[in-house]
Image 1 (cartoon, helix red, strand yellow):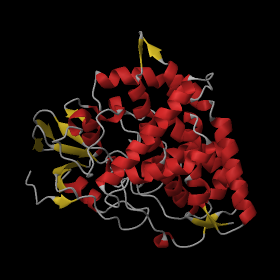
Image 2 (tube, rainbow, N blue to C red; image 1 turned 60 degrees about the vertical axis):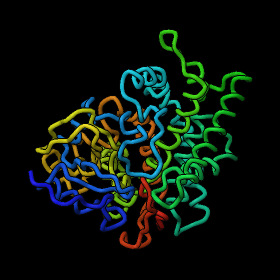
Image 3 (tube, one colour; image 1 turned 180 degrees about the vertical axis):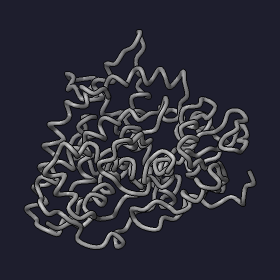
Image 4 (cartoon, helix red, strand yellow; image 1 turned 180 degrees about the horizontal axis):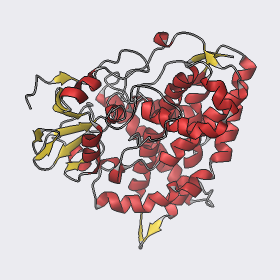
Length: 398
């Protein structure tokens, strides 16, 4: 396959909740394409569903290799090699066994009453203020932060600091590498202090307590592993859920009658959540870089050992070969094998938590505000620029 000159990546989006047009073009004619990142490094962008599945599940595409000092990267700061996100088996397998139980269906389901209570409190505050209300500051941002802080046992008054650290660490060019390192170090110091304090008092049964006590075949998490996992959880679970919630709200509220139909038939909200996940444009790049550990044929091109490969999950979730009417948001879609949570060994540990938060948020929101709708045109919404695209505000009326 003839390769044109490398394209600059990430691609600009045509609108605040729309996918870049280049993805469809590449899926049709150049499914594994050369791209150049803002760092000056280059790599292969993979856009078709089948090829993305291959990258996510084939051990020859390594996350650990992408965290090496000389690896190509998309962001100025090197990925942290000590996080589970940057590990391959067997190191990844060991950590996954130790922490997976804390993210099972039953432990996550125990968070439902807390998520419902926080959601109701946030919506009550919006109702008291009256329309127009901002769904980003009123619900989409504070709910995931509250849930993660509850998970980790973080005091309520420290949530603003958590948000600041996460914002800096997920920025794309708006903060210097030194500022990003300082944010990472500040969060790590805070979590180390939190873990130390927990050792001196009875267990509160939050996630950090479970992880401190977690053992598997005589193994346990070290102090450093606990801190790194807490940092990873905040970064992975805060902005992704927040931006997906806001993005999904735009889809639900911009289609006449849909919000009211879902409010009348709440049993239809779970499949609508799956479609929100498939359709979300929250991820600028739609995936995480891997590095090939050997030469691999992929989508008609030869990927050389040492080259970066970026599986564009956002694009895979719009692949017409897998999803009927892929460009259409269909909240009643029956066949929906989306890749929003990844696949393979790095399948998102927090997938059940994200589904719970989104289902609770949309159920409570639509039930409380009949006639809820966007306060203005979708085209006027503004997004932040970072690894995750967040709506700056989402004004709604009822």
